[in-house]
Length: 219
Image 1 (cartoon, rainbow, N blue to C red):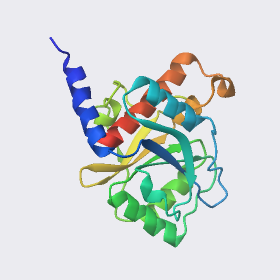
Image 2 (image 1 turned 180 degrees about the vertical axis):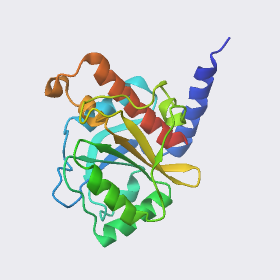
Image 3 (image 1 turned 30 degrees about the horizontal axis):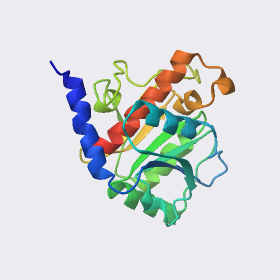
Image 4 (image 1 turned 90 degrees about the vertical axis):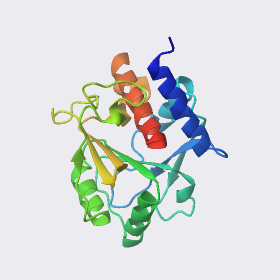
């Protein structure tokens, strides 16, 4: 008997192929203002992209793109990534562009690298004053899209010792922003010697990264 999960992955892969007829999947890191280290965890995205290529059938562009929201190439990328430890600040133009990008089908994964929470929530409230963060339940598809995470977002780094939280902003039923808080997935994606995380912790972070990407392409 063919495993039902295998059939589901074939269906999802077909939808990815339809969505990506001419270009490989890419990740664009947001270069924001405000003084925060938008460039943090420099080895994280290349490692994640390599892991996606090894573990899935997604056609991957191995390059990490670093762009400002005002960059004309923004809409060439369906997936944006934002991280850091410090202050985040968007200009009025950047807010308008980000809102338009997300409402037109783009996806943002924001990963708190410890210290960006207050400013990120403030800026996203400026982008979407009418939206509030939703805590995603453990049975949400993002935690089961490729690998199963029955307890939700994995805990990678201690930070304040609070449980990891997967938060979302929605446009209708579509998740447009996924915010990983008190988890620090990016640190788990970094080269092994950077944080000396155990292998199982690093793999949990990378597998969750695949889930986020897979979900963003197939929701």
